[in-house]
Length: 156
Image (tube, rainbow, N blue to C red; front, side, top):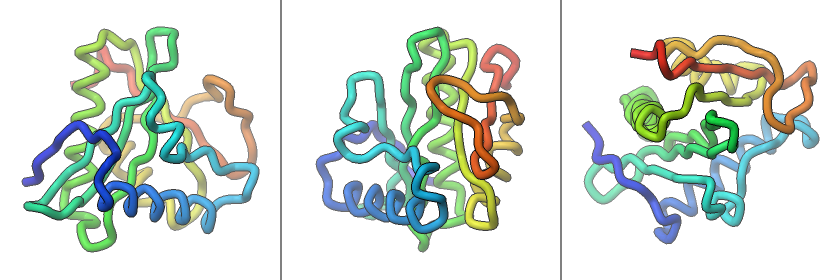
């Protein structure tokens, strides 16, 4: 098990994991399809970030961004390489879903890419009930990106 806490983005470990996330998105996505939030964007009041910790070591991060229409978006999901497939991301995702439910959101959306580097995350989202959907918010569809949605009211 991991300890999940709301993250104020001030720790060096959190910032390093976010930098790894941004670098990974840039390395595995066409430049015009990188929508990962940088540190400044994650400090927006509409965004809440959580981190999963194993002792004093960060394992994973993830965020929720309120979209202003009774829905929210999952952002900045990333697991440190040494903690991959150990449940940290699943705990972060559950925290995000629980928060969306407690805030009364109808649904959660996410945008992600295509290709082998995105498959582990896609498997996690689909296992939790996210399904493909159309474009949402300000995104534009491309051959690279894909969009998923979770109906909070039916998510158990």
